[in-house]
Amino acid sequence: MDRKEILIEFGLSEDVARVYLASLELGPSGATAIAEKANIQRTNFYHISRVLMSRGLFKQTKKGRSLLFVAEPPEKVVELERVKLARLEERLPELKAITNSSGIKPKVFYFEGVDGIRQINNDTLKYKGEIVGFTSPRYLSLEKGNAHHKYVSDRLAIKNKVRVIGEVSNEVMALKAKDREEMRETRMLPKESFTSEIEFAMYGDRIAIIDYKESFGLIIEGREITKTLKMVFELVWQSGRIVS
Image (cartoon, rainbow, N blue to C red; front, top):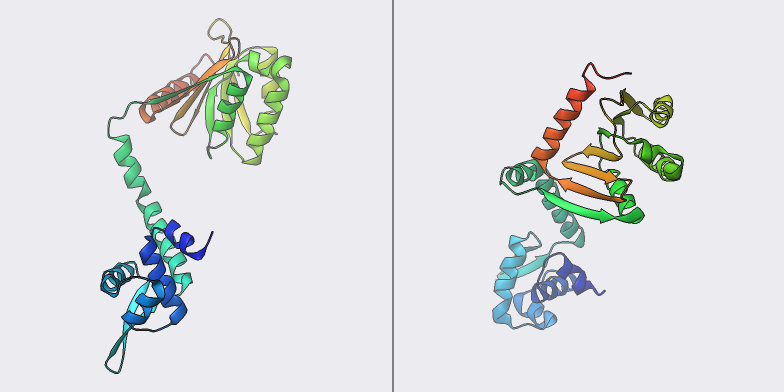
């Protein structure tokens, strides 16, 4: 990639990039010299110089009666991009609020097979924060043990805490026994109240649903639907039906 292409990636047009590079190489120079060096028509130079000045990459100076143009150093290009990114990050909550209130329908992503389930589990690891949900003994069974241990190891690496609810079973009791070392809090419901081969996880604005029996799953992305299901989880979490 040559120098011109690098600047084009920063949003400059080809002619504007050529003028900036020519000016950078020449130092303080007049319009004619820069236009010739950049291989553009002098009549186009003034428009391009205004574009560069509006981007903060060009300035004018005088030497006697001569009007000279000076390119800002390359570090200024990087700094300006950093400033723009910082401004965007500052306004991000406002922009997200607009998105959330626009009435957009939740997005649903469908996954099949072992690889699909692995993709769903990996998606929860992209979120930084607490994950809550309902687990299934089928996931914790010997058949799925290796996948579970790798997932826990990856989750601990990013320090994500978990709260889960499952049915009273040997698998869930074994899970609960390792709560402290695995940054998790597990609670159980009696089997007459709750039993499932489907696992639910809520993280950020997403819900992961995995059917380990049929080997498929969904990710639902939607603020309101996730918020509602989290409330259901909290109601069960605080309910008198919890065994331990």
